[in-house]
Length: 218
Image 1 (cartoon, rainbow, N blue to C red):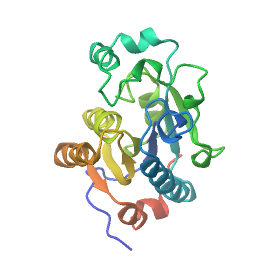
Image 2: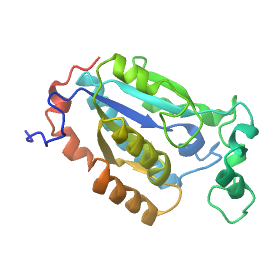
Image 3: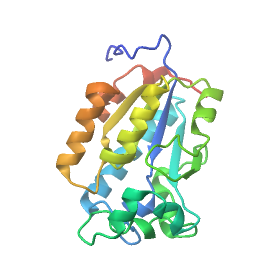
Image 4: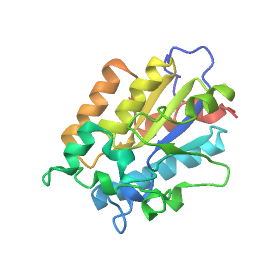
């Protein structure tokens, strides 16, 4: 058994926040902003392992899904507009990404269980902006977040920052996150998080914690 690290909260009550573990990033057949297929497969498998452990420990899994009514909701972001206008950008398909009704808006089926919660109004990198995530977490007494998903250097990073400034303890499951932008930016995202916002931990480290053996967050 691993000794619980000091997370800065007296009695950790955790939830796993799965960021954009949907087909729009992780299913090469339909993804509009895909992670490389080998990375997507690894991220899915690592998330499946961790999510199963969380559910068994009573730690809720909350899926966050990006969904837009139309391209104008995307184009309203000035920087994103420039990505769509740059054919060399890794995110050049941003205006076609996860429009309502597209298959990309579907959570990877392997990763969704009936008891999981879903927040599907995410429109920006920060999972708290424009969603009821904070309300839901506080209503259930959650003070510790385990972040997974994509992309490490954008949505995961932005959500780690946002959670930190809302005074949640933040853990990033480093095996369960990655990016479409390359290994260097994945590592840079984890470095930024570990320096100022939270704790990157591998699945082995997380699965050895008492947090996932006895937590009964509801």
